[in-house]
Image (cartoon, rainbow, N blue to C red):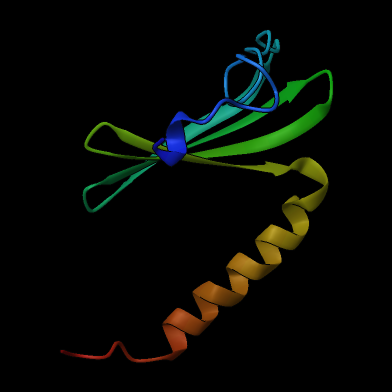
Length: 95
């Protein structure tokens, strides 16, 4: 028997559980920026669980997304400001 042919102790359900019902989200503000070949989409949204910032990176049709809950936006901004400052203060290495 091949290892991936073993029966699951959880029965014949999908590996990640049943599909979740879509959550109604309201968009408060959205914007996008093109940097080199990447497009970044920023969407401040709200749903019954609260407000959050969704950042989506689109590179040639492939998308990756991170979500930052609104209570963490100030800490995220401070960290991003530090990274921008560090990038401006240091010289890029040449290959």
